[in-house]
Image 1 (cartoon, helix red, strand yellow):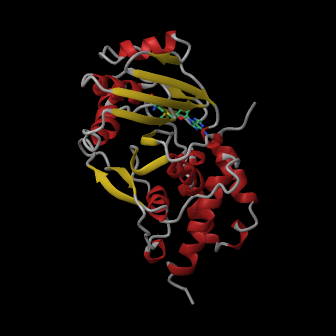
Image 2 (cartoon, protein in one colour; image 1 turned 180 degrees about the horizontal axis):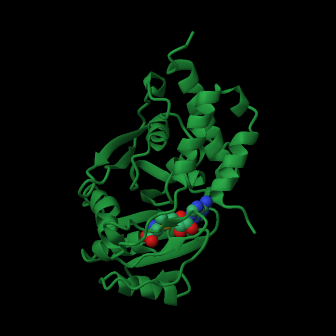
Length: 295
Ligand SMILES: C[S@@+](CC[C@H](N)C(=O)[O-])C[C@H]1O[C@@H](n2cnc3c(N)ncnc32)[C@H](O)[C@@H]1O
């Protein structure tokens, strides 16, 4: 039987020679912190249609607000607010999943009689899930077309592949970035992958996601994105909206050890090696600068 992601991460972490150089107390705290990331999700109170991924042990959409509210609040409204003037929109949909974000965006954009081009990317395609929303229609047509759909107003294609392999240059107005959570699915949140995405975005283009993860914020700032935070629904955390600009942000002034990028230098490392490497670097910073017995 394949090992779980949690087992793989803990084994990778303990086998890394850097681990043994951490003080014993920090080794214990690190193992606890990382183990906590992989606690199974409690799905007793699910009210909205959703899907569960067994490997990442995570739902595709927020179990509290559900897929539609999540799509509107985190992805569609924050994007369209800044893209009102556009008559043609080029969109990259990373972690396309059930295609909720992209179909709701298309539905809202097409209402204004405009034109939208969407490139969706995912490593696997889940079954069609009905949400009883007007965007079901376009999503259903997309499934029925074999995931390549075109008419006067929309051109929508799917690439089934590891998103890390995509290469576009200066083309998209908007990126909908929706991987599983950054610590479980770091292959989609490393500095190196965000660099590939920033190259695919035109100057002034927008990147939106649901996360406020510090490492992701750090990488985006490092790449020169201007960041603002979208207020979360209820008591939910805010999410990052980033605009591609030519600014340079000095991340070295940041004092938080978690505020460092996740690295995937050759864009082919496993989830467990990316996340173990990240946490080891975080804990070395803690050992050096946060320990009461620092030299
Ligand atoms: C949270 S779900 C996306 C939900 C989706 N945006 C929607 O609207 O239904 C995360 C998706 O990321 C995909 N994913 C994770 N790692 C990936 C990778 N390296 N390349 C491509 N897709 C990936 C998963 O297969 C999954 O479909």
